[in-house]
Length: 175
Image 1 (cartoon, rainbow, N blue to C red):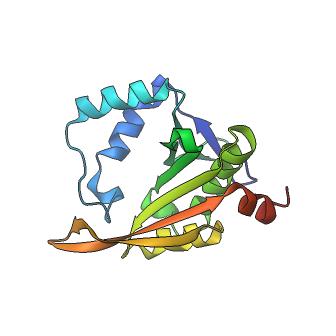
Image 2: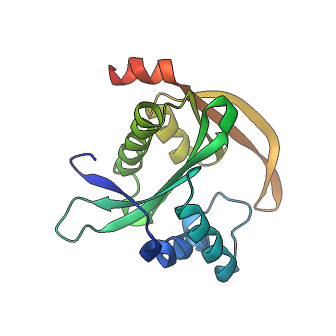
């Protein structure tokens, strides 16, 4: 939790909310494929909510209404290597205000301090400069570029690959 927001673990009551976010093209302008089959997404989200390998959160403001402003997920990337992958989305009206960075910092704290992750990774479209800035602010290192990995807006574009190690997190967080 931060002073401004909370990551609330998603429950089955949140499934429709997460499905609506997941299937909304306006919330994923840098993604190549947005799922459209809401029933299939609903089934997948419900299964993930109760799993050990996928943590789904609703990002909420710390206001009287606990206003939901987006979602964040973190899941095993390579389990046997203690590696997790981070992903997030905010409603447009809440972007550019530091909320995404704060939410991701909370997720990194969970990953490294509670789940004993060795490494957390994240990926983003090369044109998603806002997401790149979030990952940079988190202290994640751009380790590579997956050349022309995403077919986006009728052309092949690069995807950036970021990671942060447990020892790097400890330095940044003072732990």
